[in-house]
Length: 354
Image (cartoon, rainbow, N blue to C red):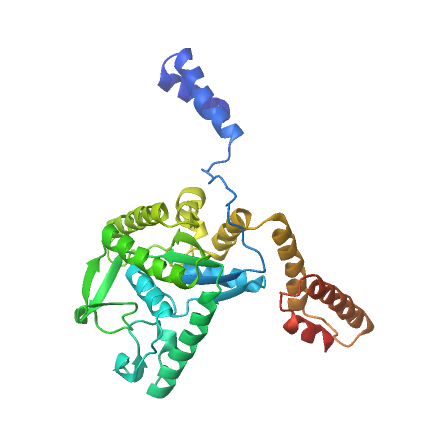
């Protein structure tokens, strides 16, 4: 079969010289390389350790990386306003975090049986106005304090498409009919100018903070494929313009890893829009290589052993064998706690002590 294929190629190319050229530039290439264009991993000058505080703000992909960081016992604050998609809403949230005022009842709107905030994700909505306001302000106070001592701020941009309600860009439409909003595409100039001002405010209260920018690989194709491509291109240009004028800032190529490295629908969820768990794991491995040193990677492996053991279901929890297993894990955790006192293992110690 292979011989027949080669004969057909030779016949198509016409002569031996063309055939040899084809073999050199195609067959040998395929035999010596994987069938994909891998993103070259690069170590960042700024490294993250378990002693650092990390705030993540942005799209649902910020939640994905935030969940990974939290799992491995990093100190995190993930999306204090809930998921934010467009860079103007992200800039607005940063401005609020550097301010001192709190939200008032007049900032809330009642829709479909719930009180909502147009600056927050729906997870903050509540049927009771007082409870809604309380939840929003408690998280705001907590995150303001966290930001003042944050070592890394990770901003993940989803789309330049935004919606305005009565002249103001909203973070979430809360399923209100689209006719109530005005759609717009934010320009690179607006993104860069607004975020630069917001980041300058943050550096005013935390001069040592370092920033990691990334563009979400989630595809926003509800309206138009071309619109999504244009949006992502604008975001990438904006990020690199920001990095030119902001010190201690880094770019992590989440979008490029998904689109140019994985580049296959098997790495998407069933909706063909969001990265699959396998893709998220792969991007996380790249993130770890980029921002973690050898000690942090080794510590993550030890933490993973503990978490895997905790999730292991014991057939007979009260047997001698199970008790020995728990005692062994407890000693390992206690040693980790001694070696790394900044990491909280209270939940695991409690679990294996029962």
